[in-house]
Length: 211
Image (tube, rainbow, N blue to C red):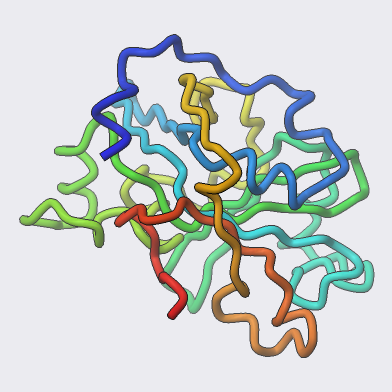
């Protein structure tokens, strides 16, 4: 497991400019190996990001902002990069996304899975798990539940003190990053075939390995 090898590295919160870059695909890949952290009432939980999905705004049929769509829910996607976009899926799952690029360019990266690192006992209690295994934090709904992230967190800045992403020195060679079609976006027609999902090769902490 990667997590046990990197818990003592220097923890560097990702700066604003990381999120303001134009290439949402590159950011989605660069987030692999970074650490998503939440601080809820002084309790720190975190995990190494193992799986992401990129959503390319106006031109991406799978994006909530496709064709310039703006609603009360999705307006936050038009914020400047480094903002949290959290929405409710099927009325049950809170899905955490990282808004990227400049203001009014609604790019976003969905965090689909993490490898637990800090506060594992707390995460298991939140998820009502008795056994520690990959189901704890694989799948975007599981990630949010384990880290106690919900729709009330949409709009917060990821450079703040509640939810942020850290660089702890994990370096992933390009050969360790794989791509595939995104999950659950069949409605997006040809855009459903885009290889916009990225994950760490051979990691057990990935929601779905392609056949």
